[in-house]
Length: 189
Image (cartoon, rainbow, N blue to C red; front, side, top):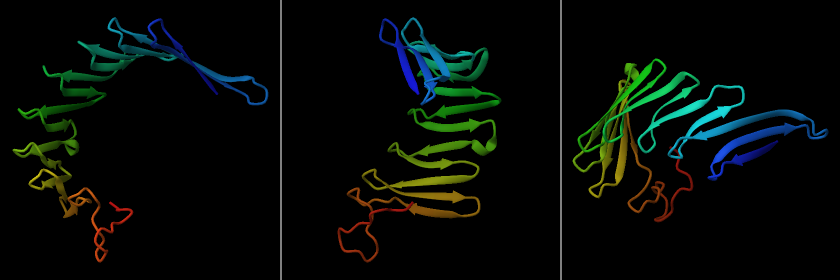
């Protein structure tokens, strides 16, 4: 197999040509070429494979992604707020809405299927303390210095805590009965 790359006068990738030859006879078995195009700003915005519809990146401003399409078929569309954060993603029959706190942290994600909803809760220090969904809730705890110290999963049928696998110096926890400073080689998690 051989891959040959072609570049335009600005040094940008313009084409990829792949060929596969028979190892003994050198007979051409397969070939494929993909061409690449750029917008006036020099950003990649189109990929054109042999015998297939073009894949296009729809952008605005300085290159923010607004959507993608395959030929004339939209694949995904993005709606953004004035800070260019994604607020709505439409793909096929699905829509994912995203909301943010006044501080800019992720607050909520809602897919038009209730089992994929997520709510995010933050403390006054800006630390993520909870992710809630219809299936489970994860709670996070921190030391006074802001180091993650634990994660607790709560499902509708049960909850089970998981300590974070590192000590105050960043090392994994010692095995029960191990000599001081002796740490496990592998921590299963």
